[in-house]
Length: 152
Image (cartoon, rainbow, N blue to C red; front, side, top):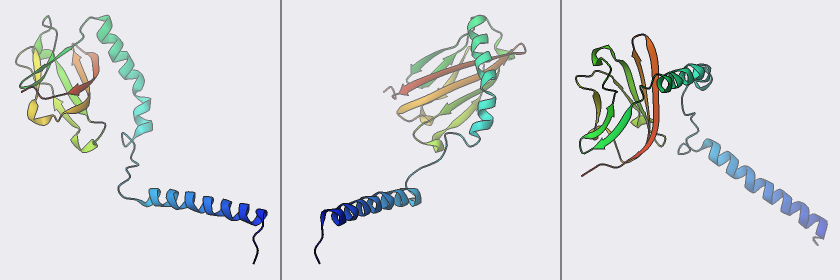
């Protein structure tokens, strides 16, 4: 049987399409490929985003922004020293973009003007830190992306 140009082009297209479909099916069925959303209820969280913006603006307007320091014991989240630390309530959320199993939350309970995130809970790499706190019925939010390296 003799193959002409038209038949060769059609066979090349069929081969190319089969090659692409093979990889599409393989990647969609592969258990190693992670197709999860960043958070489970993405659209529900999007509706609360305006509250986060308002809380961040509230922190800047009232000049109660937090600071962070890296020490040999971990990360210190320092609250303004002009606040009464017994009235501060909230949570610190640490999000690891590369592995959702490393994410964790810490409640804010202060005996000094800072909260220490222990070194043994943190791995080297990128972390997104979100401190959501309340003081005198006002809501505040502090967000920061850091690349953490353990201090030896």
